Amino acid sequence: AAGPTPAALADTRRIYAHGPWRARFAERYREWACFNAAAPFYLSRILGLFLSGMCVWRAGLFHELDSHLALVRRLLRWALPIGLAGNSLTVLLAIVWRYKPFEPNLITLTVWVVGSVAVPALSLSYAALVILAFQQPRWRRGLLPFVAVGRMALTNYLLQSILCTTLFYGFGFGLFGEVGPLVGLVPTLAVYSLQVVFSELWLRRFRFGPAEWLWRSATYGSWQPLRTGSRHYSKR
Image 1 (cartoon, one colour):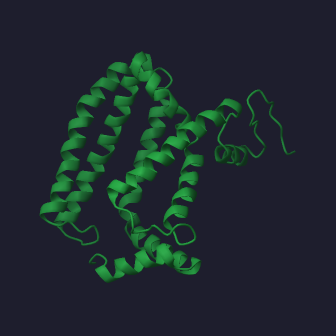
Image 2: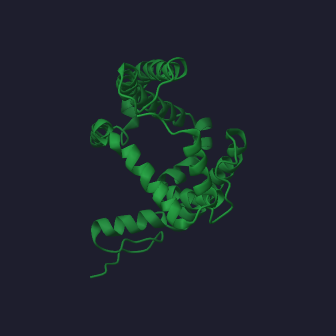
């Protein structure tokens, strides 16, 4: 299928920036249905990534990093060039052949196949770089604030959704479609910087982020201790 027309894009912009709640919900549902039409093609990739992460965790790689640093370096040597080359190829296809993700052709198949290898490879190389940098005291001091953000990933994700929809949707400032990539860096950096500070301050007093605490309590079927130094208490 062809991509959205300029008129359709303009209508989407108008709905998100100035439309009523019902129109925004309908547009979001339409987009959700459109993107998930390709679910059979990418769910297997996502499941594979989840299972790979589980295997890495169960193998104790993150618990015994000192004894696995040689493996991390080997992964970086292989994953970084594969990731860079594969992602560069997909960008080239998008520019030269004007790749359209919903058109079933050889270019689309090539992008899907290459991306299934190149995207995880590049992500793996990022993780390896962070792990190796964290072993150096100078880099560790700079990376430590981001640990708190990662421990509150769900809370920060939800908070970003609330803040950004307030900025860009009609019930807030209605800036959807009004901000270019360069100007968009300003709220991006501002929101993330605030989340770094917020996460650090929160975890000084609490064990988990608020969303993580609710999720953890629901998982175990009892209220988990939230404040640092507090004891476990159950709803039963």
